[in-house]
Image 1 (cartoon, one colour):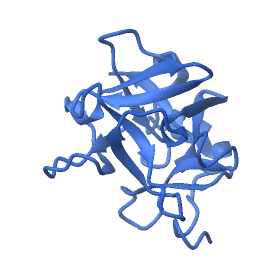
Image 2 (cartoon, rainbow, N blue to C red):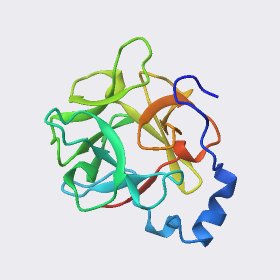
Image 3 (cartoon, rainbow, N blue to C red):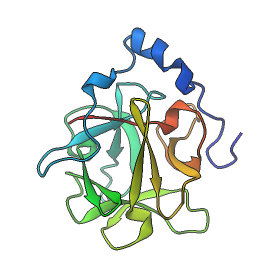
Length: 176
């Protein structure tokens, strides 16, 4: 049990074939390239939350909190992934070109936010291919922390957690 993100995700990557066969997970043929062309967007999903949940921005007036929400044609779920040197910057149509996916520098360094795009390591992401999926890490948190879904029953909160063989840490990148 991880004290920050709760119990580990119950579906391991070895169970993905079963999820695909049951129609609960999209196949690799639907996956997009990890970068998007100008004007193109992608959806980010995990096997843990399934094909009906997408990485989204909470529309609360501040527009900086992330969640896993029911997929739809929402601008907070339309992500662009742009290469920046050896890393990538992630943005949404909802927050615009000036906001990037970032890590809150609070000592725990496990919380995500949308922040003004700057030259900071919390906004520089690596996308490491893992079979048909990707593991997302930042330069700031390093190679041992991965973008993860908190397994708390609601399964809609995100965290940077110790990388493990769990389905909440592997992300599908699908045409938006």
